[in-house]
Structure formats: structure tokens, C-alpha cells
Amino acid sequence: MSQPQVSILLQKISKDFKVRGNKAVFKGLFDPQWEYVNALSNLDLIIRDGESVAFLGPNGAGKTTSIKIMTGLMYPSGGEVEVLGYTPRKRQPEFLRQIGLVLGNKAGLNWDLSATQSFQLLKSIYQVPDDQFMETVDQLAELLKVKQVLNRQVRQLSLGERMKIELIGAVLHRPKVLFLDEPTIGLDVDAKVAVRGFVRYLQQEFGTTILLTSHDMTDVAHICDRAVIISHGKKVYDNTLAALEAEYSTKKVIEFYTTTDSTKGLPRGFTKLKNNHYRVNVDKVNLKNIINELTSNSNVDDIQIESINLETIMSEKFATS
Amino acid sequence: MSVFKIIYLQVKFLALQRLAYRGNNALNIISTTVYTTLFIIFVVVIFRNTDMIGPYTKDAILFLTLLGQISFYFITATGYTSAIKLAESINSGGLDYVFTKPVRHLPFVTFEGFDIITMLFDGFPVIIVASVINWSLLSFTIPSLAIGILLFVLGLVMMYSIVVSLGCLAFWTGRSKNSIDVYWGLMHKTEQPIAALSTNLVLASLVVIPAAIPVSLAGSIMIGVLSPNLLYTLFGLGSTIFWLAVLNIIWSKGQRRYVSASS
Image 1 (spheres, one colour):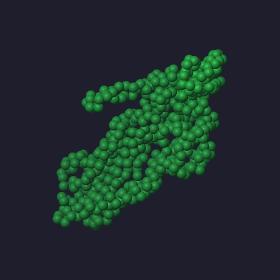
Image 2: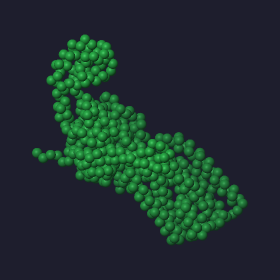
Image 3: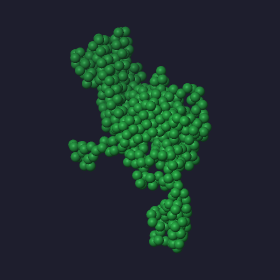
Image 4: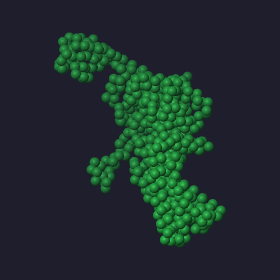
């Protein structure tokens, strides 16, 4: 069976930002000195049609810069980018008609208009046929349970309702590639669950290629099949989530509580979480020894053993990258 | 066709937004009415002592005032508001959602602030000016009206291009409130009695005060104080093309510099 076509192709992408280097205000006025900050460096990436990929990394790693380059908002300093066969920075209408973008902390809809009015404008922009428009709005609003607020001014909606409306607006034209930059930021649990389910539905039902950045690993686990981790503008990991979890399946997390502040006799490599509350990651083969060590220590009050979760995996990956 | 549909919807939805704040709009009528009334009194007082300023009668000056008011309220409620909105979007990263849409981006942003409701509310005193003009004392002819109206429209397009170009400077400066405010200086006292000058001086003054093209030049030609000659027409056309080209160049270079505010 042949592989699906390439949706997104990044080859040796780099991005430098020119910033003012002067610390002295007055000297800087007459003798400005410029420095180049490297945001991305030789980034390679291939994403195929219908994939759902998490683009992860600590703050400042270059995730949003990468998305902005892929959507044509920024010009790369070097390298080649192709999305759906187009060069994003040319901002050709045929290309823009096939992508969707949701930025979790930027409002794309007009606050003084109702969702229906904003959708009307999007319908004209994307030239969505009447019947498809009605059907899509109806279906998606039903799915996200926002039908009853469609005619309310966006400013009167809750954050969760607004984000759901933003998502519907971003996919009204049924984009082939959907870029999501922290779409669940600030949402409550119910809204997060609805957004995750919706994005997964788009990928599975319409074959939409998803590129997601999020600091919420539950988003990643529910929406994505593959993780790409970048740090300091460089790719440090690229594989399926299953492979990533398998890599850590030989490890366990032990959390334990002590009766005093003393750390004497505790296993090596522990991390203090709170007062008298510690965590240590161990290899399965050493589990028995560590448990013995902890139970024989009269200072230890309670012990929990868990499989390592995605959040911990990511924090280890970020720390080691 | 789609471009016009999009512009129509932008204008319509902005009007709906403005209607949501109709109380604020209504209050603005007071200040524009006071300003216009005081200016009419000023003109009337001056013409108590003289019949003519150069070749202009009181009604001719009031007619220029009328054109000045129409162009001022039109450009302020359309180009100026679009420029302010554009500069804010450049600064805040709001263009992210514009540049990722399959539209012609320059027309899209230049019509984003096309605010007909503010224009109608603020421009209400235009009716006062029109009502005090003795129209029977103004001599219109078909050729002078045709050329005058053409220059008026070209002048509005030119001023629109100038003010949006000022807004585009935010691509370089981050903010452009001060550069956009140059607009207020440009639109100040556009109703100059330029027909009192020689042809060369008329053209020179229009280079310095381009906003006088849709007002003093177009108005003087409409009422027959200046002859509707080819030179003035070409000058108006040339100025408009020049400023449209400037806008396109600034826009094209500016959007390459857009880095968008980080999220």
C-alpha cells in the first residue's frame, strides 16, 4: 500500500529575529547595535495527509514560529517550506482556501457580531456553497453544543463557547490542514473534552491533517498519534506517541510521603514535590529493591506506584534536550 | 464579484457594530455641529465687510466648506479608521487571521474600518452648510461639474491611500499613532481660495496640501472659478495614481516585515 501524500514539508528551516542589542537607552539612540536571535535552526519535518501531529516543546522552543511559517504568516530566514504543494509565504488564495488556523489566545471573530454574522463573512471569503454552509454550521454547532448561542454577540459568550465558535469558523470551509496553537488554553474541563473530541472527529471523519501545539498533555494524548518535540529551534524527537510511551514503559513512578523533613535514607534521584512529598522515576528491574528500601525506612509513611504518564515523559524529554 | 460581496459584508457588519453604540455616535453630533456652526458664522462675518475674496463669493467659499466637510467626514470615517485598525492589528498580531484568509489582503484591510454609520452621524452638520448656501448664485456647467466631480472622487481615493499608507508605517515602527495623526494636519483648512493664485502656484500648493485637490481644486472647477482644463485633470489623476502606487509599495514591503505578535 502506498504512503499518503505529504501535506507539510519543512527542509532545513531556520528563522532569525533581529533584536536591539543596546542596553543603554541613550547610546542605543545614536549607535544602535543589532543582534540576531535564532528561533529555528535546520528544522526538518514531514507530515502526511490525515496525520494528527503534536508539535511540542518548552516555552520559546519555536513551536508558534514554525506554525506561522507553515501558514505563511512569517518568512523563514532559510530553508524550504511546502504545505499542500504550495509555498506558504506566497499566500496564494488556492493555498489559503485549504488551511485553517486557530490561535488559542487570539480572537479571530469580531466581538461585536454574532457567530452567525461572522460565519456569513467567512462563507463569502471561502465561497462556501449555501447548502454546504447550512449543513456544516448545523452539524458542527450540534456536535459542540453551541446551537443556542449562535445568534448571541461573541462578547457575551463564555471563553469555552467562544473557542468552540472559533473552531467552527476555522473549519467551515473544510480545510485539508488545520493548525491549532493551544486551542484549549484557559478552558474548563468540559470544554476541553468537547474541543478534543471535535478535533479528533475532524481528523477521522474528513481526513483533516492536524498540527497541534499544546502544553496540555491530555490534549496531545486524545488528539494526536505522533509527537514532534523541538527545543531551542531544533527537532529533538519525532515518532509516534505509542513509541514514545513504549520507550518509557520500562519505567515506573514512585511517589512517597515521609513523616519528617529528613531525606536520610531516601533513594537516589528523588524530586521533592511538596513538603514531605517526593517522586522518583525508576526502571522496572529496580522496582523491587527501591520498594524494599522505602518500606524498611521508618520515615516513609505512604507509597504510590504508577506508570509514567505523558506529562512526565515530556518534562523528561524537555529537560534532557 | 466576491471581493465586492466581502467588502459589502465588512461595511454592513461594521455598521451593525456601530449601531450597537449609537448613544456614543449621537453625542458626537454635538461637537461637529458646534464646529460647523462657528465656521459658518466666521465666513458670514468676514463677508459682511467684503463681497469677494479673490474670485470667490461668500456662497463659493461656503460651497468649498461643504466639499471640505464631506471629504473630511468621509476620509475620517473610512480611511482614518481603517488605518487606525490596521496599525493596531500590525502591533497586536491581529493580521494573523487576515493573512491566512484567501482574500486580496490590501482591499480587505483598507475596508475593515469603512464606517458609514459614524460618517452619517458625524457628517450630519454637512446639511447645515448645504442649507445656508444660496445655490442659485453658484454657476454650474456640465463640463465643469463633470471634471470637478471626477477630481473630487480621485482626490478622495488619493487621501484614502495617503492615510492608509500612514497606517502601514506600523510595519516598521510597531506603532503608528503619531504618523497617522499627520492626517489631521493634511486635512486642515483644505478650503483654500486657490483660484486667486497663478496656475503654477495652484499646482505647487496642491503638492504641499494634496487634501485640497478634492476640495479647493474640485470645488473651484465645479463652480466655474477655475477652468476645467486638461492640466488640472491630469494633475489630479497623476497625484491619485502616485499615492496609490506608494500605498501598494509600502504595503507590499511592509507585509514582508510582519512578524506577528507572539502567542
